[in-house]
Amino acid sequence: MLKPNMNYGELKDSYLFFNISQKINKYLEDRPAAKLYRMGIGDVSLPLCDEVIKALHSAVDDQADPERFHGYMPECGAPFLRRAIADYYAKRDVLLSDDEVFVSSGASDELGDILDLFDRASTALVIEPAYPAYVDANIMAGRKIYHLPSGEENGFLPEPDGKVCADLIYICSPNNPTGAVFNRAKLKKWVDYANRNASVIIFDAAYEAFIEDNSLPHSIFEINGAKTCAIEICSLSKTAGFTGTRLGYTVIPKDLERNGMYLNDMWVRNRTTKTNGVSYIIQKGGAAVFTEEGQKQIKANIAFYKENAKILMHTLDKLGIKYYGGKNAPYVWMKCPYGMKSWEFFDCLLNSVQIIGTPGSGFESCGEGYFRFSSFGTRDDTVEAARRMMNFLKQ
Ligand code: MLT
Image (cartoon, rainbow, N blue to C red; front, side, top):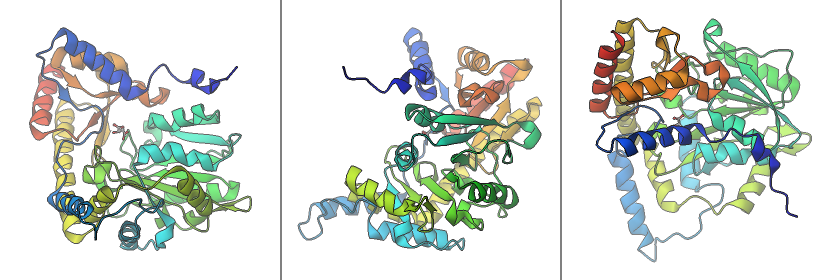
């Protein structure tokens, strides 16, 4: 008899954001007219910027013209987009060849797919609180997971623990959900640790564009030694509003070798087998993000979300509630008031003031007692949610 992947039995019943949407659906079933203030999942509210829209339209027209029509795209990415991304890195003195950049359909797809490169017996270390897909993807593959909790005592930026030696190490900086960002010295410790132990760091840089402090690294490849121990996964979802459009990229240096195998070559082999590339139209839209005008426009959108974060932070300041993040990241990570647990606070905000956030315990157990707000909502909703929270929590 066919045996399914029994590792699925080890997963939590359902995925965090699915759980939340089910709770919301239930709430709306009972109160169909209710207006909700959505600051849960990090889904953007601003439309794509003009430069991207123009590029998308013109790419659609290309597809109508026999001279400019594109069929299958190169599996690892269109040369024009790989070049544009490599040039973007070069602005921070990270020199990549075009074939070290792989275009993907988004970071979350890639975070799961990349595990094909590693033996199932390899172990994974996840710095927590963490984006739940890191843990779930490794459970599905049957890997042993080491959980490295972090907290206020280390600013949610733990150092390598000499007692644990994992093969894969997940680092997300700026962090989802805490908003904490590794500085160069702290990141260097992880790079040295990975090189020493022949581990590979999976660096999730999905929120790099939100960094405003110039001294902080946007890419792990700004750190000496990272090209022999890291893979970077990035996305245009938050940077340029591509959550519904889907586009990301992955950097695998040519120097990254384990056991005589080069991971860049392996990924070429994987992509050429398992994908037929990302749509030409979407890649054209993505390339527009990296033009001078595109960068100007997406920065204006990011500044808009940062203003939302400020509105939320200002409210928490006035309420005397401790929080992290918000400055170099789109998430505000607050301590639940009155010693409430994360889901308790979720229910309380939803039922009393119709605000939706994300319970911290959904990012693993050390997130218990915390709550995450996303700043990607509309301005009106953010202002109203802040007003409601103020009135409700000051009582
Ligand atoms: C989040 O809210 O943590 C993210 O938007 C989820 C995602 O990127 O898949």
